[in-house]
Structures are given as structure tokens and as C-alpha cells.
Length: 458
Image (tube, rainbow, N blue to C red; front, side):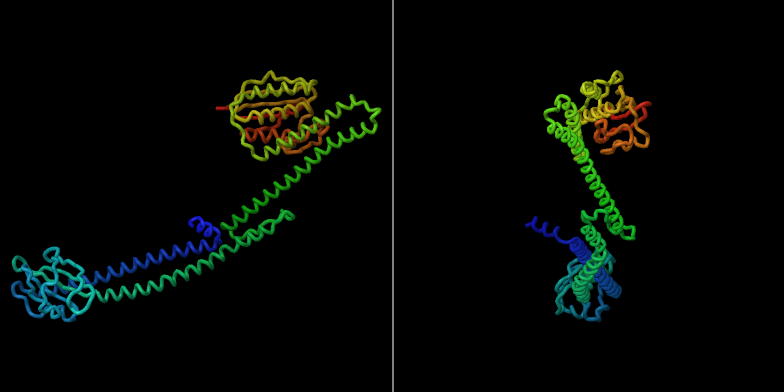
């Protein structure tokens, strides 16, 4: 039952829920205020009655002579006020006309000589029901002390309180209804821009991803919401364009080696008798390796885009470098790879991802070096610094940031002819950045030097 009610409530519109919540708060607030008002008015009226009764008791006390009470008691002329004068023995010495012949009706005593004490009494024998506010006041001293009791009916107070209660019982619901209705209208007006934003967002489709929401002129929460949504739409549009470009570039890169393989195989099949397969095999193998590297890099980038959770093991980065150098030597037998300046460095990270980054750095250097690759590793200022330098054509300074973008090719000697796919350095950048490091390119004179910084393990 409770869950069903919660589901029903959460399924209502925001306007309805806010209006209902506001109406509940208004109802509780007005009801509480009405109760406090009634209590305050009742206390004030009772206080006035007590003051009236005390004043009449003082008048009676001042008119009394101990031992010889006078006849008619002052202050009882209205016929509603009840007065009794009682001595120390409890005998009624005098009373108002409406209590003539009655026994003692009041038993409580004053707080002290000359200090009145008020008390509520029910059911005096005066022919009317209700309560009476009674004050006791001591008059005289010693054995001649008399106690004056003055009782004033609370009927007028009760009638005033009843009228107020009736008015509040009618007025509070009316006020709650009016205020809730006003709140409903104001909320509708306030939420109308939100509905407009929602409608505009619903109209944005894949066929028109460049469309943006209208930003309200006011610099308020709605304006900030519209700007934030536009920023989000811009990022989504950029991501979609990047994805489309990535797919197009990947298709183009895959088409090149596949077309080369197919062309060579078609020629060999058409001239099967004269084809020397032994001579064709190295070319086919090179294209196959290139295709394999491209597919491998595409898979790696797809994993990086999925934001994988890397391991944070403590690793010897120098061991990873030595392992990748041993792997690279057979693939580049004509290259001199100098690892003599590789020192010890312990980092925290994922061994497979870091090995992939080092491998791509070595492959990139091997494709462009003329004959020498220098790899260096050292620890400086709490950071492991690794450099991979080649003696190739180098990279112009304006292009050194751009080469880390995917499928980037430069209009220089570093082109597709060297067998690259334009993905290796992009993978290096993503892996190193995910490990809290940085990578940049410097001039090696001649050639390029790629510099990697990774925080060392604690």
C-alpha cells in the first residue's frame, strides 16, 4: 500500500506535487496560527475578567469593617457578579443579592494578605450554566480577617471565543483554498518556461542536432538551466560528430590495406602460373601486419572510450621498458635501440596499458627513425620521466599537439607510407592521462623526442 502510494505520488506532475506541498504547509501554518490566536484571545479576555474581579473585590474589602460587615455589598449591582464574604470560621458574613442565604460556595484561599488569587469555578447556583472566574482577597488582620470572594461569569468570553472559532473554521479553509489556487497559477506561470524548454528539447532530432534551446533573457535558474542544456547538447553533438568521423576514418584506414591485399591477390590469381608466391608473400605479410595493428588499435581505443577501470598495482616501469625493447628489436633489425640510460622507476598503474603505451612509442619511433632510437627513464621530483627519441624528420612545433588526435596525419615525411594508422600516439595520450601523467613532444635535432611523465609510487 505504501509503495503504491509513493509510486502514485511520484507519478504526478511537478506542478501538482509542489502545489499540494505548498497547500499542506499553508493549511498547517494557518491552523497553527488560528489555534494560537484563539488561545491568545482567551487568555487576554480571562485576564481582563480577573482584573475586573480583583477591582470589585478591593472595593468590597475597603467597604468592610472587621467584625461588623455592612449591608448591601458594592460591586454587585449588575446582578451577574456573585460575592461572598467569609470569616476565619468559614461562615458567610455577607453576600451579594444573588447569593443571599447560600452556604459558603468557595473553598480556596488567597495567596496572602492583600494578594488576590484567581480560580475557575463551575456550576454556581445562579440559574445559569457555565464557568465563573473567581478571585479571593483577604481583608483585615488577625482574628477579624475576612475573605472576599468575587465571581464573574465567563459567558461573554465563551461567546467571543465561539464567534472567533466559527470565523476561523470558515476562514482558514477559504484562505487555504484561495492561497493554494494562487500557488497553482503562479507555479504554472513559473514552470511554463520549463515546459517550453522540454518541448524544444523534444523537437531536437538526429536530423537537426545543431539546434539549440532558446535561452530566457533573465539571468535566473531557468536561464542557467537552458545554458547548461545547450552546453550538454553541444557536447553530445560534438561527440556524435567525433564518432561519425571516427567510423569514417576507421573505414578508410581499413579499406586501404584490404584493397591492397585484394589487388595483389587478384593479380596473383589471374597470373597464377607466372606468379612467384615467395616474392609476393612479404608484401602480403606486411599488409596483413598493418591491418592487424590497425584492428588492434581500434579495439584498444574502443576500450579506452568505455572508461575502463585500470588496476593500480605497483610496477617497475623499467621492466616494462626492457620487455618492450626486446620485442621491438626483431621487428626493426636495422635500428639501433639504445636503452643504456634506462634507470629504475616504480609507478602505480595497469601493466598491460602501460606496456601498450611504451610499445606504441617504440613503434612510432621505429617507423620514422633513420637508424637510431634512444630510450631513457629516470625519476626526478617524484615523477618518472621517460623519453623516446628518434633521428627521423621530426615534428613541426605547430603540429606537436595535433598528433595526439586520432587518425592525424601530417603533410611531412611522417605519413601512411611508414605503415602508421594515426592511432598509436592517441592511445599513448589516453593511457598516460588515465594514469595521472602527461605526454608531450620536443625537438631532438634531428628527429622528435616524446616525453612522458608519470607519478611514482608512494
